[in-house]
Image (cartoon, rainbow, N blue to C red; front, side):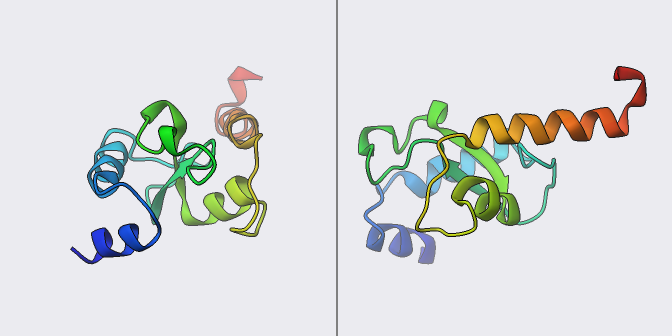
Length: 104
């Protein structure tokens, strides 16, 4: 209930809390670092400038709190990173190569 009130204050759809929970359930790891802790859902294209994409799963990515701030918002929630997916892919690929040296 508290989340619904918080999201309503932020101008979110009343369906956002459910969409967010469902998305994290289907994508339970940070897309960048694979963490399962402190997960958040990031809008690839900001919902405040693209309200029609707020609930679109094609516009969402699961990020841990740290990656959300650093990769999604360039260390300031007032900023946006249009390259968030590309940056996440690079980090994920680099991590995969480090963990699986046979893929080099």
